Length: 123
View: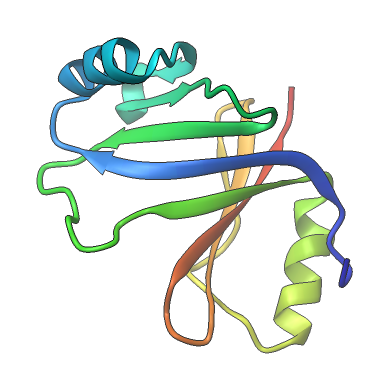
């Protein structure tokens, strides 16, 4: 698949204004459960009934309401995946970031400016 070795996961990341309220809604309305939570980042990842697909909720002051979803692809080797995309002149939003001992992330854009992210779990 074009130089990227996917690991079978995808996270659809959404911005929310009140993480607690959103967690309650997703649990009650859709039956999703928290599978990972990073308090210091205002972040929670929720299960879905689809294998390998989770919903990420990130608390922000003013959520984007006009298409602010970021699809995050789980990859086995983020450096290799990023190098492949860069070889195609893909624009990235800065360097690859590491969040604690959990994950490395790299944000990139398609030709129309739509946002995507690569994620490599470290644990």
